[in-house]
Image (cartoon, rainbow, N blue to C red; front, top):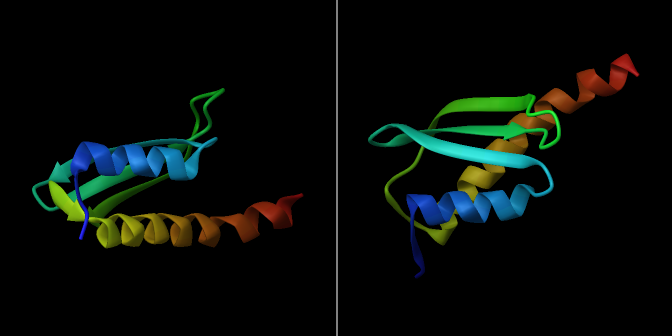
Length: 84
């Protein structure tokens, strides 16, 4: 099973969410804050705190984090479409 360090996991998430900007940092020993942002303006699209993580993770853990971020992002899309 492949293991990745936290910085490498963040790089995988940057690639996954490109062209949207992604940054992540650990806010506690076992959790992180993830932020998706517009690369041109720097405006935050969504920020999620308290995502469970570790300093070394399995590839499946990274996929779980990506899915959690995507689920949160999708929950905000319908209200934005209703405004248009």
